[in-house]
Image (cartoon, rainbow, N blue to C red):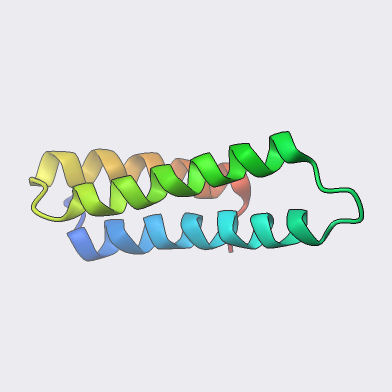
Amino acid sequence: MSEHVSPEDAEQLVQDVSTWYAEQIMKERRATVPDPERLAALKEELAACAADRAALQGAGPEEVEKIAARYAARAKELDVQ
């Protein structure tokens, strides 16, 4: 990302992706036959989102941009609304 990204914008991207993972976890748990491997992978991704959100606190502009770029790409990949 070439333009400046605010920490708030980056946090919103992380939140959007976190919400997607949380929704997928709920759907998987409610499935007739939950897939334990998918559930574990989703939980791992949600934990990574939490770690990145924590990393945003006090992060410099370069780190904020890296996190924002990563989550913008992930949101697009997951088709997060």
